[in-house]
Image 1 (tube, rainbow, N blue to C red):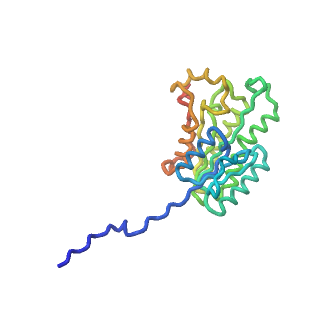
Image 2: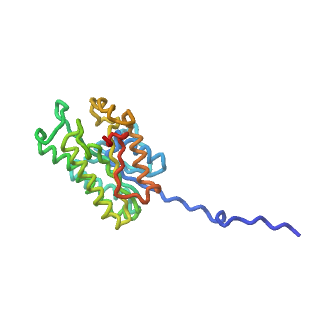
Length: 262
């Protein structure tokens, strides 16, 4: 009697399902934290729709890339509207799995002094709030349908300056980031009905172009005794967008090396 063929595991009888391509839209992508975050998502196999004021340099363009870049000035409401329009066109009805609101501005005086409540022009305050606060809100609204379709997540980039008096960040920047922290909580409650999670990361002293040269004097106040690097922020943003954080919403993660403890 011939031997029976070995039993085949039912799992192996089915073709492996094709993983859905995941898409992230990220602002402030040209440098620092934004650039590092784009690189992290690309390494993880995500499709990236990036945005910055400038177009991608010719030497960085990839022919027939599945990624997309949209040049828009998000400090101007018309630029925000342009990003929403072209971003949804790039999605072409497909879901959006993550929106990372990273673009921001921290104005300084010509003497690099801290712009406070008494010496800052109110027009500057309005420009800061336009980009740091109203733009994330407008983009969340503009991509709400695509995020709902993807059961996605929003990550707002706030700052340690939104939680304590910072020696270099001005009052307009600090209060705009504090407002964004509060907005994150409100959005988490409201967007939950769409199946969308909303969280924030609050970087401390990260080695980027926005950092003041005088920041080195703050290192003794940081328990880990060093400045952070953009990749460390990018990794936390990626975590919040990944399946590992699928039960995390309304949270703000401090990426400060412990600086916020004091």
